[in-house]
Length: 334
Image 1: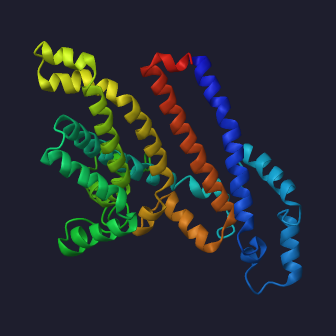
Image 2: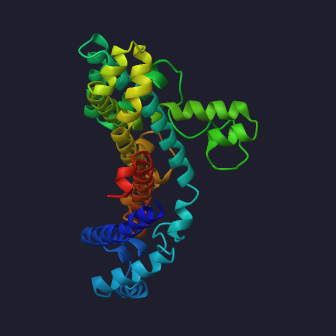
C-alpha cells in the first residue's frame, strides 16, 4: 500500500507543474498590465517601468514563470496588488469558510443523493424512480446562480425563514477555535450562535450541492442496478434473505466503489467551484475573494488561488484513490 501511495504522490508533481504553467500563461494573455493596475491608470510611464522592473515583469515569460515557481515551492505566492499583503496571508483566514460551505454541500449531496439512487434502483420504473431521476435531471440542468436566487426569494424574501447572506448574524459573536462557525459554536457551548450559523449555511449548501446531488444519485442508481443483477444477489434472494438486507448488506458495498470515486471528484469540485455560490450569498470564503480579485485583475491572487484549488483537488483525489485501493486490493497491485 505504501508503494502505491508513493507512486500516486509522485504522479501529482507533473500535474501541478502543468496546471501552474497553463494558469501562468493564460493569466499573462489576459488584457491589462499588472503594473498599471498596481499604480493606477494615471501613473507615469517611468513609474510603470520601475514597478515592472521591481516585480520582474520586464523579464521574458519563461524566466518569470521559473522565478514564480521557485518562490511558490517555498510557499511564497507573491503579494496582492490590491491589499499589498502576501497572497497566502489573504487566503488563510478565508479558507475555513470555504471548507465549512463545502462540508455542508457534500453532506446534503450524500444524504439526499445516495437515498434517491438506492430507492430508484430498488424500485425501477416506479413513481419513486421517475421522481428521483426528475430531481437529478433538474440538479444537473439548473444554473447555480438561478437556483441560488430562487432559494433566496422563496425562503428569505417570501417566507422570511432563512437568512440571505453572511456566515453568521451580527447579533452573535463566537470565540474562534477552527474558524468554522457551526463547529466553533458547538465546541464553545454557544448553541444559539451554532444554530444561527447553521441557518446561514442551509441555502448556500443546497445551492452548491445541486449538481453533486444529481451526479451521486444517478451514479448510485446505475451502480446499484448493476449490482442487483449479479448472481450472489439472486442467490441471497433465493435463500429468502430480506430485501432490505439484500440491498443494503449485499448490494450497497459493491455498488459504492464507483460512487466513492464520483464523491471524491465532487468534493474537489465543491471546494474549487464555490465562486458563484459564495458571491450570491456573500459568503466570506476564498471563492468570493477570488471573484473580487478577478474584477480587480489582481493577478497574483488569481494565480495563487488557481494553484491552491488545484492542490486541494489533486489531494482529495489522492485520498479517493487510496480509499479505492483499500476497498479493492486488486487496484494497488495493478
